[in-house]
Image (cartoon, rainbow over all chains, first blue to last red; front, side, top):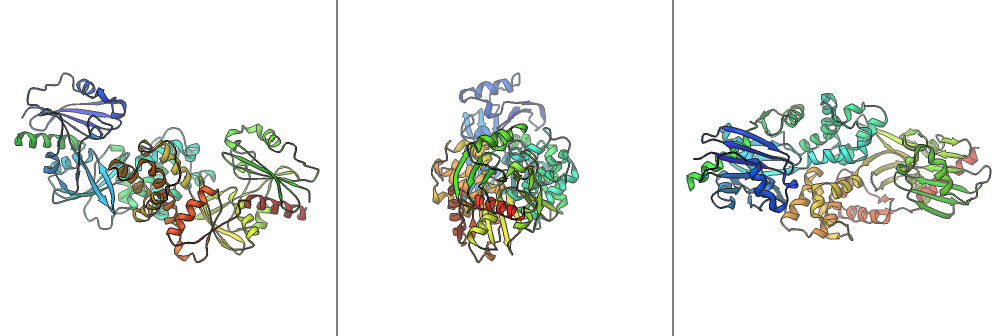
Length: 298
Length: 298
């Protein structure tokens, strides 16, 4: 197997990695070239820039995952319906350039007749399963659109999306709550954050709980600098409120940036749930495993 | 009693009414001069413009309610703690000009150690109680920040705020959901609206339910033109989910604009709750009753 060029190409950023035959990441690069900054015909050029000087001999693969496979991306990739195993996504690659450049499919699932979708997180989860050498577990992938994923028998059985990061940003920057908060978030105020997590459980409705940011501020019951942490606790606490955490005997596996996994770990611990932080290399491991499966098959 | 000049001065608009001794509204005016458009020293001038040519003989009152009494308004008025009766707010006016111009206090209440506030809605509720000649009931005042108010023994016992209108606007205009929706709302699609109300009950979490707008659109399961109505059903349904509607034997009294009361009536009816639409003149009746009480006392 030749070296793999792997891209995690999301809405707001692009990460690229050069990975050797053994799965070692030789070099990693990050660019502010999320798909929203790329025009329809510009994807090949941005790919070339992001991977400049990396070897790509004949037979070498370039694998992409994330929103690059959405309708607004380079080419629309499929959604594999859940339950979906690793072999299912390997068999459903969308080829941008046959034999050389492929996009990993997303996943879809259905609850009460309403669909849900992911793109990119499936690759992270399968990568984490390989790194941890496990075949089941509850995963949370915090972010703009957090995903809660249940894996059993090495397959993604189901998942749910929560618009937690996006709602935080909207409330933080564009709502009436923004008026009483400092312009920068500052460091996490753990106490205020935990108050928010607790309030979300009691209130059980973000439409109501969010207004407490304003009321607490009007009565000087919380310093302005602590309000962003409190709001963060409210939205993350609201996300956790809907998880079946009592049934959760094993640790929840958290995959995400350090700043977010820290907050989710704090909040889950408050609710009596242990966490395990998966390796940040899950995406690269997932893409490398897909490439290896592809070259074995081919 | 002389004629009353009454102002309902909110965040984004200003309404003024000239009301005679019997409580009849002689003239009503609306201006796009909400407090956000008025600089600190400019309030007297805007008042003068809004009430130009209206008689204001010595002894005549000018009464203001709403966000004009907030920290960002003309002068900060008090909050009366709940439970609060009509006499309590009459006794707590904040005088901008003694004997002539006064601002009605807001109300505050507390749930689980967290405060909540209103400004303006107390006047509407007390006005509606007088118009309907009742002393108890469950009220909803839909809007940017919806209020659910419980009245017993002619006092406002407690209330809760839901940021429903604001969250709808944020999701509608600034979130990822905006990308798949038409720019204008169009007419209400009743079927899509009711689907949203139902989905909010099942999902029981707006962070999750909101994402279904995107997923339904990706799979062409709902026409783009129906998505705003569906989203409206989701947020209003989420607000209703937290109300104790099973205990609601009598109709819920809805006070608000026609467009909003129509939606709340539809959604409440779906959940088996009858509604009663209060007179749109509730604010004027409330302010007139306060003025009358003031002049009797004075």
